[in-house]
Figure 1 (cartoon, helix red, strand yellow):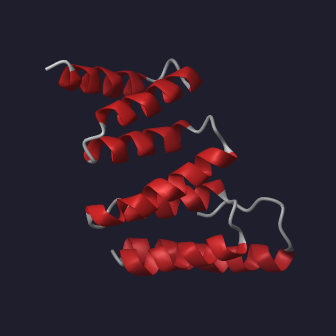
Figure 2 (figure 1 turned 90 degrees about the horizontal axis):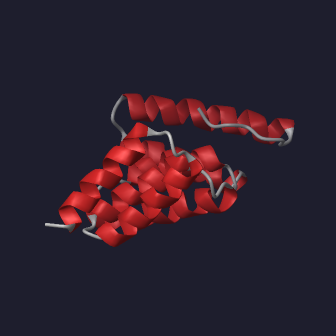
Length: 134
C-alpha cells in the first residue's frame, strides 16, 4: 500500500509492516488504527506522497473539525508533487465540503491544467460553477 522510495532495508521493512497493519485496520473499519499506522509511517518517511494522501483521505472520514489535518496532509503531498491531480481533487473536495467554493474551484482549475482531458475534473468544475452562479 505505501510506496517505498529509496530507503534503507530496515525502513523498507518497517514500512511494509506498517502498510500491512494499515490495510488490515482499513479493512475492518478501524480508522483510528489505520491513521495511527499511517502517522507512524510518516514519522519514519515524512515525504512519502502516497502515505500523506492515504492518511489525509482517512481524516476526511472523521468529523469535519478534523478535516484540517486532511488538508494539511494533502498540502504536504502537493508540495512534493505540485501536479498531483489526486491531491488537488482531494483539496477541492475538502474546500467544497467546508463551503469554500472559491477554494474548491481554484484547486480544480489547477488540476485541470495538469490533466485537461479528465472528465471528472471538468464535471466537478461545472457543478461548482453552477452552484456559484445560483
